[in-house]
Image (cartoon, rainbow over all chains, first blue to last red; front, side):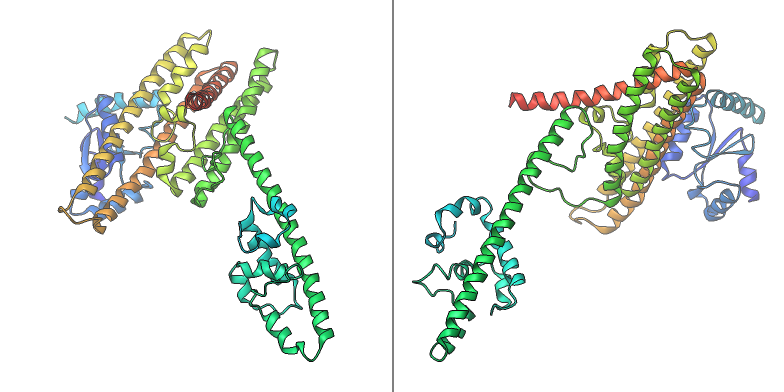
Length: 105
Length: 370
C-alpha cells in the first residue's frame, strides 16, 4: 500500500497499467493527446504485482488497471475520466496535470 | 411417387399426396399406430415408413396382392379354416381402420399444406417489412424455407429486443416530427426528449449484456443493416459522427454553446482516437498470440487459450465505446436547450432511419440487376 501511495505521487499524472492491457494503452494515448506525459507503472513487470493490485482495489478501483492518479489522488479508471468527454473535466485534468508535473520536476 | 402403390391409389388422391408425399407417410405412420389399439400392428411399423403401410390401408381395395407381409395376414391365416365369420369381422375392422387412417392422413396433409402456405405468406411479409426499413432479424432467411442454426440465447434475446427497440424508435421519431411541426409546450417537449435519451441508454444497456454473451456478434454489427455496418466503430456509431449529424440543425446558438460544443467535439475526438489505438494494439497482440508457436503445431491449445484471455479485453472496449457514446449524448443534452435537443434527437433518429432505408434500397436494386 505504501509503495502504491509513493508511486502515485512520483509525478503529476501517474497511470498504473499492465503491458498486456490494451485499455491502459488507450488511456496513455489519451493523456499524451491532451499534452500530458504521465508516469506509467507497468505493474505486471513489478515483482510485487499482486500486492499492488490488491492495494489499488482497496483504494476503490473496480479493476486494478488502468488506474489514474492526479496529484497523488486516485481519480479513477476509464469511466471516470478518460472516455468521458466532459469538457471542463478533461481540460481541467490537462491543466492540473501540466501544472503538477511541472511542480514535481 | 411410390411405385408399388400407384395402382392402388385412386387418381383423385394424387393431387393431395403429391407435394408432401414424404410427410404424409410419416404422419400416417404415427397416426395409424396411435389411433388403432385394436389392430395387430407391431412397433416396427412406427420406425419405417415403408410401402407396407400403404398397402395395409388399401387392403380393402387390394385383391391381388398379399405383399403386406404383416401380422394381420398371418393371424388371419391361422384362424381362417376354423372361423370364417371371424375373418369377415377382421376384414371389416381392417376396412374401417383403413378408412379412418385415410381420413386422418388427409386431414394431416391438409394441415401441412395450410401451414406451408402460411409460412410462405409470412416470409413474404417479412421481406416487405425489410424493404420498408423495419428491422427484421438476420436469423430469418426469407429466401428459402431453411431455418438458421440455433443461436446463443443471449444473442437471440438481444435480437428480439432490438427489433422492439427499432419499432419504438420509429414511433418516437414520428412523434417528434409531428410535435415539432406544431406548437408544443416546453414540458411536453422535455418529456419527449427525456424518453428519447432514455431509449438510447436502454440500447447501451442491452448491448452490454449482448457483449457478455457474444462480443464478436456485437462487434460485427450483424444486428444492424448493411449501410449502418459500413460506418461501424467498435460495435456502434462513431461519437464524432453523432456531433457532425446534429450540428447543422441548430439554428441559433449562444457563444457559450458554440464554445462548449467545440470543446466537446475535441475531447470526443481525442477519446475516440485513444480507443481506436487501443483497439489496434489489441488486434496486433491477438494476431501475434495466434500466430505464435512453431510451424506445424496446428490449433495448439495454449495459443488458443491465451488468445481467449485477450479477447476478454474486447468486451471492455465495447463497453468503453458505448460509455463514450452515452457521455457524448449526455453532454449534448446539457449544452442544448430542450427544443434544440428535440430537434437533435429527430435529426439523429432520421439519420439512422435513412441509413436503414438505404440498406433496403441497395439490396433491392442489387436483386433487380441480377
